[in-house]
Amino acid sequence: MCGGYDRIVSHAAALVDEIANELDTWPGVRIERRSDGAAVALYQDSELGLLDRDRGVAQLRFARLEHDELVEHGDASPSDSTPDPELVSHNVEGPSDVTTVLELFDRRYREVRGDEYPDGLPDA
Image (cartoon, rainbow, N blue to C red; front, top):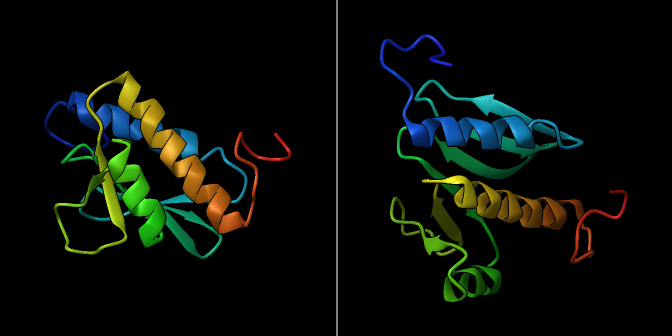
């Protein structure tokens, strides 16, 4: 699980890896690892979001109205790493965060696919 690192993988990094591994099983989704340790989740040629192992955070892009709704309901926070008005983030600190981040990725996944099903994928 250390993946070539000389240090022990942090709890947050292990949780981020768990999310990436789950996303990698979704139809049409692939994970591209970057040299800085982050992973980009892609559906075809569209970016779903970014998982940052070192910071233990997921970042996803949503249209402004949806962004504001996610922030208002506490499902995500405005991204602190960039002033991008469409980028939200969610810290990954425990199992409940894994669930929340996967729900955010599912929402983004359905958006990119053009699905209009509120309770999951139509072929699930």
